[in-house]
Image (tube, rainbow, N blue to C red; front, top):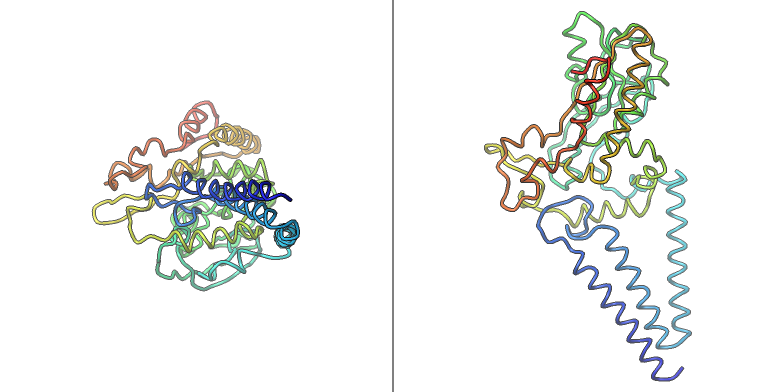
Length: 373
């Protein structure tokens, strides 16, 4: 190889290094707004991925400029490393390794309680507030006492069915709340009618319908009350309709995502409350997880949700029962009028961070023969 050609290839390699650095420079979000899953609070995974690809490509060209043998050795090392990573990633996706359990720092003992219906499952221990953990904030340990009924749901009484069946997700499960303080526990104690919940953590509207059907619980002549949360039910609807996307993004099954979650949690911490999507109400700081990021590009899911609600409501009424709907707003919708936002807060205009789900449900409720509340 001629010296001129070596020089050209070497310069090309160095140019890729420069392009990699430029990618980080222009992709960095320096707004000081704390967002989960950004390295050092600046870069998303895709930005770092482009940086790595450009850097590796630049290295190969530089080694090639030195000698073909050096480039071959470098390529072998890169290919071997990539192959090993693919094998480890595949092991996670096949369910052979739980990367989240291996790589994430131990924050508590709650694990997967409430995410699957396991009859008579019981556990006690300590854990930490989930939102605080996601944001990398410190929180005091919380004790829990979790016990499931014969169906695998968290109820104070073990029944085959009940007069009123509450259908939903984590809002009803209340894994860190005493069982008698959950919504179902309180209503069961206050009302003359029997009450039970059919709920699991992390499932959306459509999956809740399937959960009730699969449980075999008799709903004939019963009142079914479904709780729809605007915060993550649009994302859950998307995951239900595209289960492969949900599996792909599951941190526990992916080495890449588990490592990324750990890295962003370790590097993205901030002691400045203004660095979060937050506000002050009197002297109390509130942070918000469910903002525009929970529904951007997924607004169409509101239509799929109302279609599913309509079909399910018909099923209930055809069996002689009543169907009622409870809309659960995000914390931002509830508190926005009371909030004092930090200077330059990106959520100051809170209307831009509220999902379209309430309006869809309101329109659907007027057309539905069920009884929305």
